[in-house]
Image 1: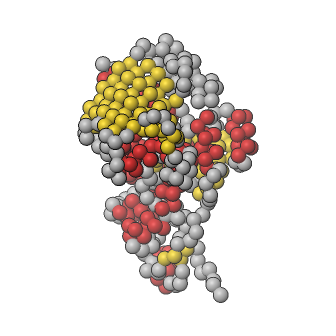
Image 2: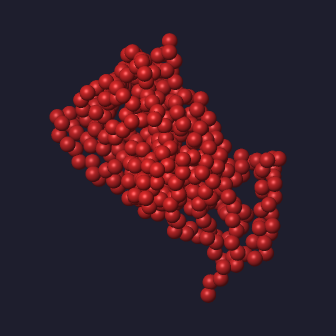
Image 3: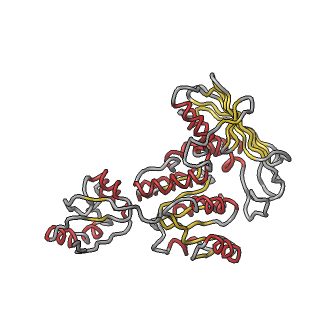
Length: 398
């Protein structure tokens, strides 16, 4: 008969792993932490178990980096089934709802806390999705010990500081696009992620849309050589409205938000950095304080071109539409759907496990946490996009 002989706990496993990797265990800050493990290590040496169950599922990372259990046991490890990840979501607006709908389709993930500005509306949304904890301050969710990860769907101007708060609290974090509204903010998030070892990802959804994945697979297989991307990002927002047409409490931005999608996607599809970038903008809106029209031109190191037109003045079809022009085909991508140059629909239903880019994005976030690896669209991978945006902002400011 099996018998449980001991239960050993530790917190902030990713940060501890980084301290081991970087040989910081004897530094003044870390030495008391690792000294506290000595009693447990001695007990394990004297009472070696036959089987160890290591929870949460960061085992693969520990074994890959150290070849052993971090506390020093030589006992052979056995992975346990993945436990349910507990998630806090901040921002119960249009995109917060998209994530809640996506997470509902993902096994072994539970949203346990919902944070947003309007408490009554937040309670209504929480009741609809069966979320127990509600609040108006992110700090309330970060205090919950059961929370493993946070998804931020809050105003752009809050992203960097809130991402830093999540990492400081020992929580994995996914930030909806953009990562920050300044290069300084984006670099600060990356620096802390590298220090803690936690998973930090940005919602660059275009990398996950089946339409763009299909094109990417063609490029990687050598079946399509991208020569030019023509992109239109058009909305009708002469007043401050969100994606659902509801009044917004913050101001959107063509450059730091909407252009971020295309700048990142273009470099990703090219497999080459952007080496030249130019931008022009129209008049500044007298109330909103932002440019309502913008034009951006990009050149990748492999010679491919990108032309991006953005507008909040467009009273017509809304959204972002991508035309890929290559040496063997033309593709038109409209969010998750894909068409050829003759506007004939291409079946992309087998590209991934879902036809929903947000769902695929969230699946990648949770998989990276479970597997202890860097996610696609990690803050490190998308940082070059924000360097380009910073360069364009400097041009526009003269």
